Length: 121
Image (cartoon, rainbow, N blue to C red; front, side, top):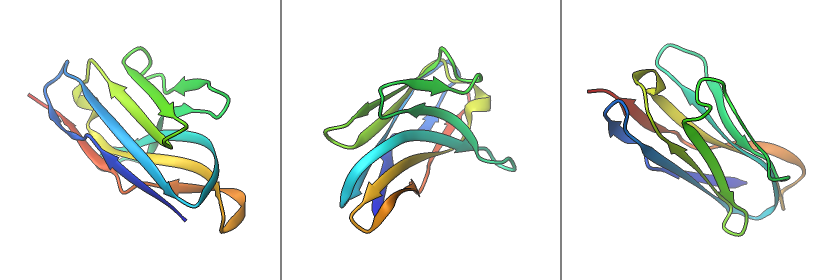
């Protein structure tokens, strides 16, 4: 199993910044993609950003130019720097990791518990 611990959420004013972090632990053999998703109240969970094992990043159109994803492969961590935050960015943000562990031969999806981000004046 993979345990994901997220941190960094909170309340911020429009135009402000927050940095989310996620640390993966467990008997991890390899990590493929590390991603962030979010789910606003009453809406479906949506993709925010991905960092692939090959070193590329991709973003949802709604956050391009404002959010930056980064990962530290040595520490099995992924971060999301969020700038110029808008009220519509308010959501629970989830870390997602696609990893291979000692317990299963294939790559599986693992989710964090989520961290609340609220953008409001």
